[in-house]
Image (cartoon, rainbow, N blue to C red; front, side, top):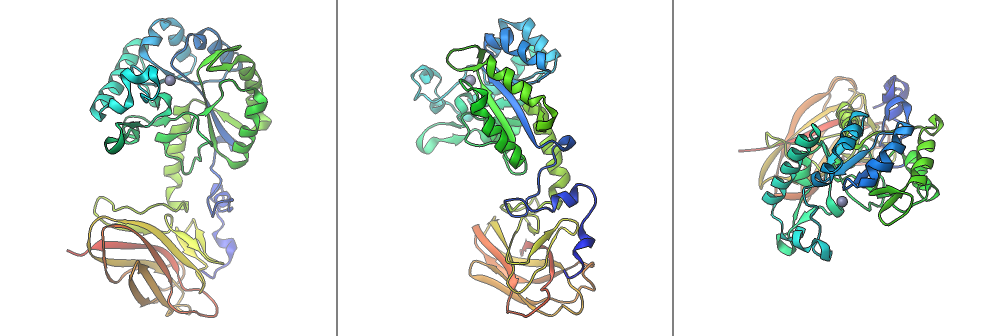
Length: 413
Ligand SMILES: [Zn+2]
């Protein structure tokens, strides 16, 4: 594109989104009310100290947390847990019997290695039903016991993530290494970072880094008391709450489900105006749609233009690369959607997929503002992963090749 840079800067957050971040052109995530980061506090196993000490303390500060409960543990303090829900705390599913790897001797009788997917699914449904009948709510979020996301062993190992993704809005792990990126993180695999046994000074650098990077920090703990094993200290919670409640720190604190819902909705709202390179998979109609949003612009001048949903400033040294999963062997027809001014039209392009390529000439579309779609040729592709590239076929001195919106690959019957 050759028009002035000004004309593509939109009002509101789109302009903000155009500011490049450390990673390519990923925009800063728009947290509500201009907050810098999101924070969720979560506690596992429905420990007694949660209702006795942790929840009353959090309530003093008006902070709502997520509690991943085992139905049997909830039963002994029903009134207190119901009260917690009434003031806005969230209850999550943590299975019925807390299966973990049999590598823990205590878990050997309910070892994940000996589970089947069917057994796990029944257990998760059962836990939801029990929680519903005890507390009157159905959990929307899940925490993997021991943070472990597998069942089976060796060649029989399977991931629990697809099941959790299907059943819940979010799934949280344990002992994660970094906060979750709201643009990118799989909500079924949110990292849970340990707050047990920590002082506020130990966690503060993590909060500061999450704030700088606009991330979502999910802290995870167990008991809530002054001391002891697997315990989030009350002194820590007090210091943290005071810090979080200082509006200058710009922290949105809310239960995991609340933030997951916001992240989902925001991702959907900005999906086609945000360039986040992603593996292209066949859609339901078995088409591969290589959008600009999913491609990686590589080169000195190329830029993703959110309001056009296209790559512009496509000069001689620029290219766009996609990671693509070809669903099946066969011949595919490629359709290009582009725009170009009449003066700039006529340069040669190359579209490559492994050893296959299509060479052609960028035809006139009418203007930079008019996008046109046309078949550019066919290529034979094999099922599996391939990297695809669209670039100029020959060097040219100045101006641009085209603005590239997308390439569609349709299988030829
Ligand atoms: Zn647990």
